[in-house]
Image (cartoon, rainbow, N blue to C red; front, top):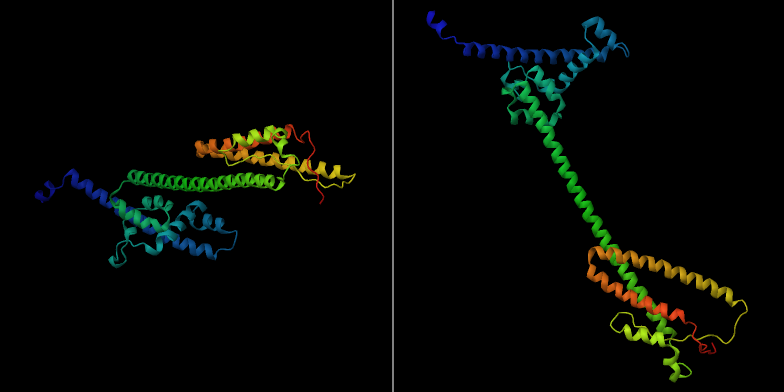
Length: 302
């Protein structure tokens, strides 16, 4: 007997106390789940609006406490085993009442995996709280990384769309310049006095010689007009002038916008296109300053 007494050390006694405490907490959880089961059953039977009164008069529970016990039953009841039946033992069997309450914040599909991975059976409440906090922070970092990835993809897609719009804008400019050249070619006709051609169009010839290296080849041109005229023709031509000026203004705005965008992507290519556009605009400005020429355009019968 003395030999048995000498073997009981403070360490052994502490281990026994901790084991009894743990078992008591497990029993408390099992009891709480069973109470929750019965509370759920009673709630389904009690008339609507009388639940709080029934709790107060019958079991002395507040609605908050009752809902917590019902929640424990709903979340753990189907999978919980108090250990008496090893065939039904699950990871939930190692939980204490307080641990089970803390784990209610986890989605049901993640709870069992979290219990196994973190060895919760050997954790204190403080350690479990820290593990849950670490998990939340890791999930937040993961969500933030996914959001940043999504933003990067959106930025990339936006850049692709902007490049496509820029390419379309450049094509529009090239097409506009080509159309202007074609219109000039259509309007080109043989002057009545070819020898005076150079004298009549000094600015046009100058623009043509300066622009030999550009995509815009400015050439002097004349306009064929009908011999007959309508007294009201001026109304039609004023409307046309207004419409053409608006078209030029709109196209010029699109041109400057496109050059601005191109400057952010390829400054060298922007400068090339700017010089081409500048030669065209300079030629147009010089031409309109002296148009119509001093000599009337050639009149031909339609």
